[in-house]
Image: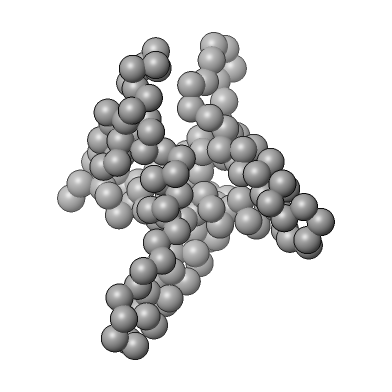
Amino acid sequence: MKHALPSLWFAAGLTLLAGAALAQGRPATADPGKREFEANCASCHGTTGKGGGILVQFLTRSPPDLTLLAKNNGGVLPMNRLYDVIDGAEVPAHGSREMPVWGRDYRIKDAEYFMEAPYNAEAHVRARILGLLEYINRIQVK
């Protein structure tokens, strides 16, 4: 439950931003979660999250259908587990892990991007992962 409160605050913030944009008569154009998904997940999980991405042929196991995660978990999206899988905290004790450890990858890319500019690496990585989780929540089948 260690990630529940930040995800709640992040989702609330995104809702407020979208509401403010719509209140001004403009549609919200920024969708960081979708952009993150398309940049880092769609190549394996497909553009719809159901699988069938362009890299599937090179994997030993098919990636899961991300749209069924809540349905397969009693109607609740397992946010903490997903966060840990994406960040890399949940790594198998034996065997390999085909899914990239995005938390580490984000930290490396962020360090290269920000170079010597002051930034909080953990907060930035957390925001990217929470944005991605918010998007995965939106693509769940009802």
